[in-house]
Amino acid sequence: MSSLRQLSIKTEDHAPQKWSVSLKEDVFKRFISQGSPFVVRIFGEGSLFSPLLFGKFFDPSDAFPLWEFESGILLLSLRSSGKTSVDWFQSDHEYVLKAEIPGAWENNVQVYVDNGKVVEITGQWRQHRELNVKDWRCGNWWEYGYVRRLELPEDADWKNIEARLNSEKNIELRIPKKGPSCEEKNGSSNGTGNGTKREVAAIKCS
Image (cartoon, rainbow, N blue to C red):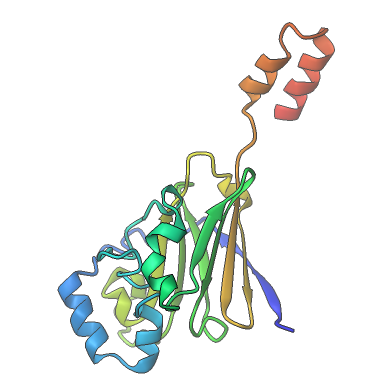
């Protein structure tokens, strides 16, 4: 039976220059062609962190509107050839992402929420040796770690995001959807009964 651990969701990040260096397509081609088998596992075809996951080159450090697309359509080719385990979907109550993270159990996988608008999954695969650079994310980040940044839908309840990682190196991200706004709740009670219902709705929303 695989063990499971809850990942903490970080909301404070004191690295304003992180991801300031974009991963370009020509740079990636050279990097992956010269990389070790482990590097190919992290950034190769079908990986959550591959710039080519969505069919066309897309820098993983740029926020992608994942839940605006159907995984079955965007990943059709990769799935038909058995080259990816990435999946995402939404229900009436939440947004879900599932993916394998090569080497995740050995490395420190972190999940950040950036200003309530972007969620990012990141981790290091190699130690940063340049002592004059404090944060590996502020330079050529792909030489030291990996990232996938995703736009949060407008109705995402980012304060209650949950992330779990198991010993088989699979991560599961669950993002609840916000319920009806206070105005909607209060509005729905107007004219349908006495003031007590409106007071109860206001208390629940306060």
